[in-house]
Structures are given as C-alpha cells and as structure tokens.
Length: 73
Length: 187
Figure 1 (tube, chains in turn blue, cyan):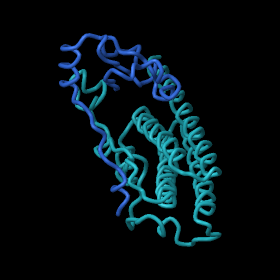
Figure 2: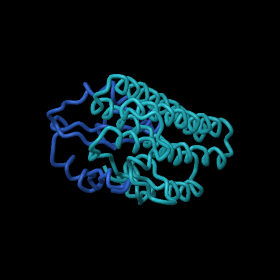
Figure 3: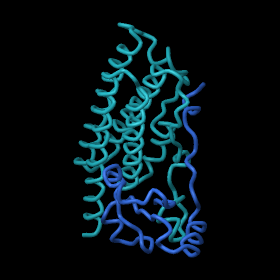
C-alpha cells in the first residue's frame, strides 16, 4: 500500500453546475460559503455568499444549517 | 466548487493538478496513521524550507522558515506518540516499518508530490504559494482532528489536539500574510 492509497479525490462541482444549481434553487435552500480571505471577498463573490474564511470554519460551523446542502469555494 | 472564483468568472484555474485529495481513513492501526502523518509533516517541512529559499519577500521567507521548523518539531512529537502506542523504545526503520515508502518521492498533505509542488511553486507568485500553503494547513488541521478521534491512547489524544491547534495557528499566520499581500497589491 503506497502513500496515495490513503487519499481519495474530493468530490467537486464544476462552476456551470453550481451556476445552474443556484439558478434553480432559492437562497433559503442551501448554504453558500466563501472560504477565502475578506479582501478577496470584498473584491467580488458569488451572489448571496456568506464569508467564513477557512481559518474560522471550525468555530463558525454553527452558522450553517446542517439540513441544507453546502457549496464552498 | 471546482476552480473557485476563477472558474466562476470563466477563467481556467491553474492550480496544482494533483490538488483536491483528502485522507479517507483506511489505516488499520494507530502506528500506521502516525507513520503516515510523520511522512506528510516531513514533506511539508521540506516544502516550506525550499519555499523560504525561493521567496524574495523576507517577511514571507521568515514565516516559511518558522513553519518548516515547527513541522520538524511535530515529527519529534509524532515519534514520541509512536513510542507510546507501539511500546517500542527505538525503531530505526520508522516510518518505513509501518508505512510503505516510495523511494525517491516525498509527499505532502492531500497526497501532493513534493517535487511537483516545488516545480509549480517556482513559477508561481507569492499569493499562489500562500493559497496552496493555506490549503495544506487546513488539511493538516482536519487530519489531526480526525486522529484525535481515532487514537484511543489518552496521551496520544492530547498530542494530536495540540498538533491540531498548532496547525490552526499556522493557518492563521498564513491567512494574515495572504491578506497583507492582497492589501499591498492594491496600493
């Protein structure tokens, strides 16, 4: 068993699929999270995205509804 | 979302091709898990050390030197846990005695090959290197939280908790530098 056998690819959605998903659903149906830094968020973000920088994720998970799908970028 | 904001804006993402992997807990024994983590810390330490040599920004280079030294100390902490868990006072073959090592190749978090990451980093700006390092630290933090849960030994749990906190501190330092870098780019 080699090192790479301990890892598996993270499942991701392409931007087009996310675009379609956001178009089809209302903002009340999902969590949309921007995990970048505040300056990057200020420079532009997906409509309705909530800023939670990756370093703060662990402490702020309660802000996300666990019953809804979460899209992070 | 694949490619992040770049992809959303219609740009082609130029991240490391191998990025996007995560540890998925197939290790059967705690010793194996500790050996794997030791190897990943070793890869990260070498990566940060090489990055410190490449960077012209001295503040950034100093941070990467400190991160490399911290990862080296983590290797020592992990070996101590290994001794506790395995009951062995010495194991000259560690970590090869518990994890299959690929000759001539080092790996980092997310299964990234060190050689590929360095090849990519030499052509990359500081902001890109910081983004990759932030993702490495986020993965390490996550891995140590999982290990704290998986290892039954109480001392081991405490050490993994401390290591998780230290990786979070790294994450915060890298994020601050990344933010400063963005502010300076705006001036």
